[in-house]
Image 1 (cartoon, rainbow, N blue to C red):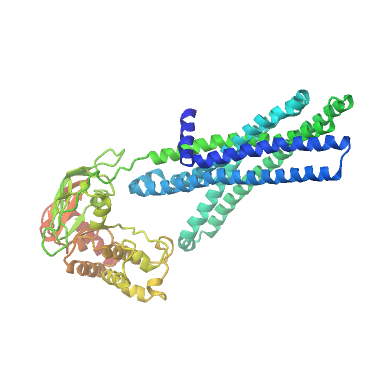
Image 2 (cartoon, one colour):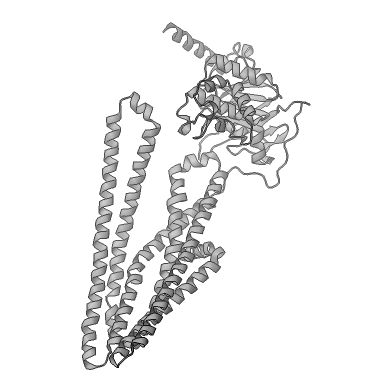
Length: 588
């Protein structure tokens, strides 16, 4: 597993290998200079004991200042290079993940969970950035620091050098112990913050329900609980940090005191010069930071590798619905001078992943160009699945669904979805103006086209009543609009696309019957669309050219309303139930 992860790290760094090599070369220069500077300081101090001139001291001090400045500049450059690689990988990964998510079928996000996907696209990608930036830089710097500094220290005095760095493994162990705890506490703090943010977002979206049911006190207590948890987690993390860093400083101070104690004895015997002792002190101080940082680096390295695997797992997921390798064009309309599409299903069978039974079982029908056909049936009979299948929102078997005689599985997805306008019951609206929501399917549509679509969807009157008209900003998920206005906006968006096939998946459920009938008449009068209307309102279906009746995933009846009510079966049972409900409603 480790080899695979190192292979992944190498693969991500390969496009930036030149930058990484430059950063490593800069680190080599930095560490060579950091070894040379204490030797220069040693020379100056030893020269002071034998007599010196002021000009010599100034010259050597100037050289030390120049080299120290150069070292600082090169160190900054190395960090910009290596950290920059991490940032570039982060930006590239986020772009890849976003594009990858857009290629997935809608059901994947619903089963995976948006929170999990967002976590991998943000938190895990940030961990990868730290792995490829901070961890790579820190590990390289630590290896170079020890590889170049230890030989210089041993050359001065092996005994003192080993004694001085003998406590450093204790520093590393301390960091490893506290570092793991800090990471767990930081993770808990982030989770607590995420839960707090989720509650705020949910309450802002559902503020109407909170007010209607008078649940302000309940939400206040829920926020207080989560806020307290976040505070406690933050305090635990602060206590751990406040304990760790003084411990590291203490170990470093003990190491320095040990060096001074043993070094003073060496000074008395003459085996060590003052310059040598000062150089050793500078070298010991030089190794403190890389050693203390090594523990954090190892934790970051491990966390980054796990996150890298999680990101790779996400990117390896293949979408179930894809464009064919060699797509074909949709055949032209079968009726000259009209854009309306002909639709045919041939023994269509469809099963959702891990489902026990078929969602659609042997469904066969044909829609003629320009027809208005309703699909009705009890809850869970497969109506919505049929609508999603027509737009290939779910995988469809080859040779079962045809548009103008062309198998839709052989059509490029982008082209197919310009041929089929699917309007779901819950039409999603973006936080943008009404005009932008209407032109979402055709971003370059002019204002006249937007207004024409709004008129067809019978939304024009509502828009005129808004202070800002078409520039009215729609709140998150269309919260500022009524249910009927949201549905009509989603319908207007689909009408603006001018698709030959319009599929309404209970898209007029929140619209009153008169307005719904008016909309259908307006859309149908153009005779350039075939309309498949899924509805639970049989009174609306009764006005359609034909009705398809589904039950248990199967097409059990089809025909005109007058024919179906005369036949015993699902449709008549549903019709009688609807009539009874209407009578009870009028009586009440």
